[in-house]
Amino acid sequence: MKSKKLIIGNWKMYPASIEEARDKFTKIKKGASVLRNVQTIICPPFIYIGDLKKFITGRRVGLGVQNTWYENEGAYTGEVSPAQISSLGISSVIIGHSERRALGETDEMVNKKVSAALKAGLAVILCVGESERDRDGHYLKHIDNQIRIALRAVSRKDLPKIIIAYEPIWAIGKNALRAASAEDALEVSILIKKTLTSLYKKNADNVRILYGGSVNGKNAQEFLCNSQIDGLLVGRASLNPIVFSEILKSAENIK
Ligand code: PEP
Image (cartoon, rainbow, N blue to C red; front, side, top):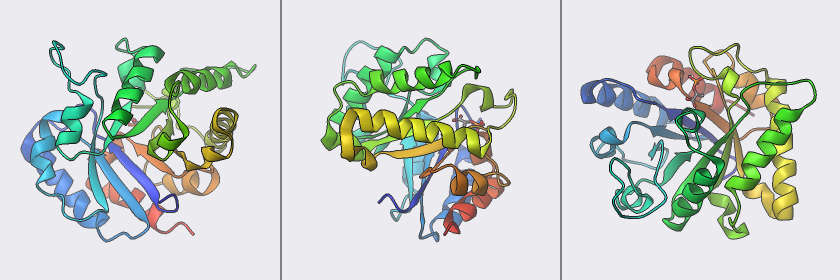
């Protein structure tokens, strides 16, 4: 499993209509389903999941969601539970994306969501990352801390279901300062491995690590080759089937 590159598309709150969502998804699926070395997962808005699910055929392209709540039922207007997601046959959920943390999601909520999602059998794409870099390396401590809190009470046996996406906030979205460099991503992927080893010893190898933040058709290969990562979490570029296909092809051709 670990040898296939994992490329995840986060569609955020796009596109504006189901027709556009179908069009983009079917185009992406056509290219992605012939790639042997890549597992592609698209995370559209919840509202489109039921419809897009009808287009899923093989295992190379799947669907995930961008968030979950931490209880399986109750008076939580507007929320969607891990059990509901899993009952649709969806197997992955992004948790702790910086855009959700900016809306008030705390490390403790992220931790509860991770535990609830694992209990429902979902794979968790846990997002971590600093808002800015400082010369003294406080950002490394911040990421280490985010991981330790998020994985509190996560047992070794659940580690194959954990994927950690390093997403520096300053490199995400259209207001990004700049894309991170492959070295920036490498430094943090090494830190993540150290944190995991300190928590889980040898079993930490089971956790896949992704990079996300202004990935495009031109820089994808550089990250995949030089940052010791297992794949990418792609935002804006995953909404453009042509650019996203270039990213997928870069991943397919990594030796
Ligand atoms: C994201 O939303 O997770 C992301 C990485 O966005 P972008 O690729 O647009 O920077």
